[in-house]
Amino acid sequence: MTETAKRTVRIATAAYPLDWFDSLDQYDAKVSGWVGSAVAKGAELLVFPEYGAMELASLGGKAVAADLQGALVEVARHRPAMDAIFVRLAAAHGVYILGPSGPVFTGPRPVNRATLYGPEGVIGHQDKQIMTRFEREEWDVVPGTDGLTVFDTPLGKIGVVICYDCEFPLFSRKLAEAGVEILLVPSCTETEAGYWRVRLGSMARALENQCVAVHSPLIGSASWCAGVEENKGSSAIYGPPDRGWPANGVLVMSGDEEPVWMLATVSRDLIAQTRADGGVLNYRHWPEQAERLKAPLRSIKTT
Image (cartoon, rainbow, N blue to C red; front, side):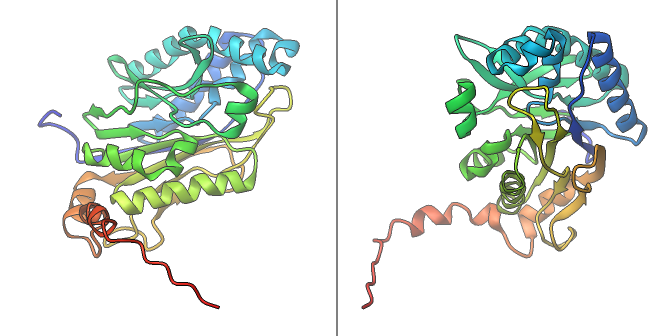
C-alpha cells in the first residue's frame, strides 16, 4: 500500500439488468454508458454483479443463448473482448471496476470469475469458491483453485466473495485478517429468498469483520438466456451497525428490481476506528471463539 492511499472511497454498486445484443459494439455502448454515469457521480470503485457477463450469450444467437452449455461457452468466448472494454474504461476514467462475473474455462469445465480492473489494466481475478446447487447440478461450473485474493489498491485493501461465498463466514474472515476493509459481493439470485440469503450474509460479514460489504445483484428478466431467466435483488452498501454508522448498517440501498447505481462515500479511517474502539469489538474478539469451543459440549435432555 502506498503512503498516498486514499482515506475515503466513493463506491458505486450496480443493480444491473441483462440486455440482448446483436453486436459487441452494442455491449460496449451499454457498459460504457453505465460506467460513465457512475463516474459522473464521483465513483472511484464500481461493482458489477455475478453472471452479469451472461448477456454476451446473445451474440451467439437465440439457439445458443437458450442452451445452457452453449451459453456458457459463448460467453467465455467473448471474455477477452469484455476484458479489453473494461480495461479501456478503467484507464479512461481512472477508476477501479469489478467487472461482471461469468464463465471462464481453465479446464474441461468453467469457473465463475470476477475480474478487477484498474487504471493500469487488469489487476487480478477472484473465482467463486463454493458452487450453489444449480451451478453443481445443472451448469457443472466448478470452484476456482487459486483460493482467495487480497487486492491491495490505492483505495484500500479489497476482497471479493461471490454470491454464495458470502454465506460462509470463514472466507470473509480470512480476508479481513489479511487487512481487507472493503468486501465486494456480486450476486445472481432467481428468487427473493436467494436475494435475502446474500443480503443477510453481506450484512453479517460487515458486522463480524467491522468492514464494508458492497452488494451488487443481477436484476430483471432475461427469458432468452438459459440459467439467468429471472433475477431478484436490490443493490446496497452495508457497514457495521456501530458508532458513526447507520444504526441498521445500511449506508445506501436501491428499490426492488430498479436498474441503478447506488453510491456511498466510505471512510477507511472510520473502519479502522470501529475495529479499534467500536461500541462492540467483533473483529478483535473473533479469536475468542476458538478458546471457548475447547470446552466440552454439554447436553441437557428434558422429558
